[in-house]
Image (cartoon, rainbow, N blue to C red; front, side, top):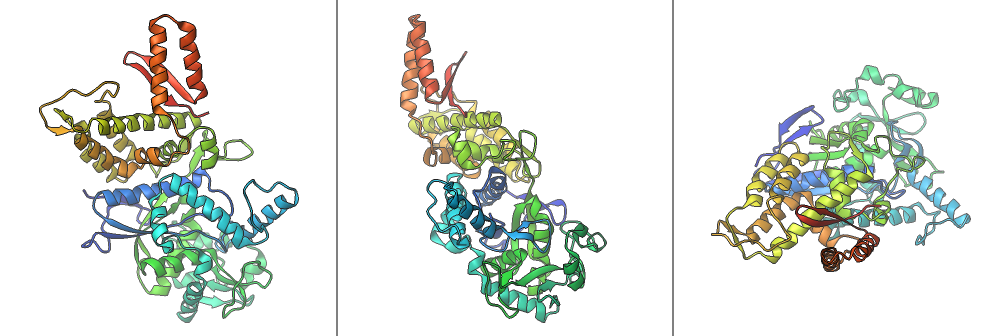
Length: 510
């Protein structure tokens, strides 16, 4: 199988060729969360698409070395400004929790000093890791063996300072009159290639959003901050330019090059990272290393809409993983709903869509259990094995998840799991079919997740027993008893549907 992947840098779909193609090793850096609050489903859509890309590479024979940062300093509230305008998000979180503690509104289970940004970061970082693990993100398992694959910027300050010193020495950066170290964008002719911005478009200093005092000390309005001396900043470190803190673009460059090398295969993030963050990463990384490239392939996920609009707490459509689990959804269904729309299209999240994904996962899981139960039975047709190659081919077509799911669903429809299988001549066994299903799920990551990571356990035997009892009641025309059983199932969060093929059930998302 050959992966073809859209490259945001060249704006075209390209054949993927790894730097170390002979050994089939891929280096992959993912822009991770800034841990000043719980991650929402929009954040997780980008992270999960990166996880699907990784799983696809592994399914076709690559070994993937992935790194994803957990930002605990320096990321500012105004991301659209290259210098990082506004306040440090970690300080904002600390202030928010400090106020909550004063008013007695600190979230239940939060036992930390809310005035300590590092303690706040650790609390939300742990919450993110728990959520990421529940959603089946493979990098969490890597981090258990090697914490460096989920690095924190506060642990890489010395590497950041060294990179700034290199850029100043090579005259790609300068110390301005205000003491701030800025990157000189005019020293890097390729600046703007990723985002499509030109120097002419940037000459006004990002639409006039940078204050005039800052503009006056820069060589060019588009120059961006690498290090800012600030003795009042809560999180600060000693440097050759005075106590201060790093620019938020610098962090990823220092960590990526330290952990993966000067040139990496893939860099991923949300589309909001393209400019200024990733544009600035490319400039400072290439100039520091003297390489022509920082990442050979750039992978960006488009925004997630909720009910057709922007997610907003004021609209009541702002969801974290924990919010949806409390509504009765499983992490497996949430994962499927967030990855099923192509990553280069805006996805529209709805609770109805989540219900549909839950039914899909339940259907696949029931088939997986049925195949395990009857694995030794020989069969005359092998729809799952036949679908596997088509499935992988769809995934290798720029991660065509919808096409891959279509191949899987068509194969699943060949089975009736409400009765024992018929013995065949022996083209294969149901165990072989189960192996093919496992290969496809190794990419989607939902069936096995449903069995091991669901936070809402379901007693399948009890459900099936109640359904059988209801069928017996209906057969005996005991309509009141049948209704009572339906109500009992409903109270358990189970929806049943009577049809020509019998009674089927699924979990309900409230």
